[in-house]
Image (cartoon, rainbow, N blue to C red; front, side, top):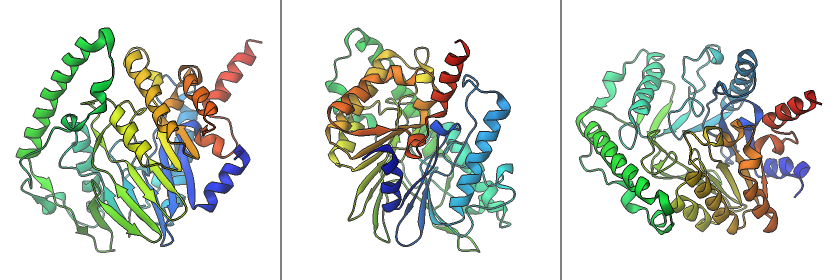
Length: 374
C-alpha cells in the first residue's frame, strides 16, 4: 500500500485523521464512521511547546487550524470519547477557538472517569470541564456530586508482568527506587479518591447530551464493537501525568487500536497486549524524544523502541506513528531502528501528515534550516 493509497484505504474504512503533531499542533484526534453516525476520539489541540522551532504566532495559527478542523468533525459526530484530560485531547467548552459553539451539545460522551485512577491535575481539569459544560445549561457541578463509590483501589503495577522480565542493567537499583517513590505517590492519590466527593455519571442534559465514564466500557455502535480499556499509565510505571484509556475497535473489515498517550509504549505489558489483539491499524503515540535525555532517559527510549518492535511482530497493515514523537527535530534519528525493523518485516509505518501525502512539518522545518546553511 503506497502512501498515495493510504488515505483512500482509510477513507474506505470510514477512518478520518483529523489532526496530529506531525501537522504542527499537539493533537491526537480521529473520527470513525460507525454506520450509525461518526465517533470522534479525543477532540483536543494545543500549541507546540517553546522548544518547537516555530515562532509563537505560527504555533497559535496552527492550533487554530486544528481546532477548526476538530469543530468541523465534531458537528457531524454523534459520539465522543475523551481518553484523558490533557488539553491536546479535549477542548474546554469555553475555549475562544470554538467561537461560542458547544461541540459537545447533543452528543453521547464517554469520558475518562474523573474520580479514580486520575492524578491531581487531571482531577481538577475534569471538574473544570464539567463545571463549564454544565453552566451552559444553567446547572452547577455541586448538583451532581456523590459520596465516593469505592474504597479499594488495586495498584495497577502489581498486574504488570513483562516489565519484570527486562534486564535493566546498572539502572536496576535506580528503577527500584523510583518504583518505591511511585508507590507512595499512588497511595496518596488513593487517599484522595477515597475521601473526596465524586461526580456521578449517567448525566443527561436538556438537549439529550449524555455523559458516561468510559473506563472499561464495551460499546456496540452501528457496525463497530468498541472497547474503551481500563486505565493505562500515561508513560512509565506510576507516571505522574496520570492515566489514559486506550480504545480498541473491531468491525468485520478491520481491527483498530488507538493508544492515546502510552508514550512509546514504554511499558512492555502494553505492547504485548496490543500485539495480542492482532490489529490491522495501530494509531500509536511515539516516545517523547523532545524530552531526551534530560526528562526522558536512554533506558526508557530503548524500552519504547523494543516495544514498537513487539507490535510490529504482530504484522499490522499500518502503524500511524505520531503525537509526542513529532515534536522533535531529531525524531527520525532517535527511532531509526523502528523504521529499519518495520521495513524488514514489511510493515507500513508513517506519520499522520504522510497519510495526506505531506511531509511532517518538523521535517520541513529541518530541511529549510539545512538549506539556509547551504
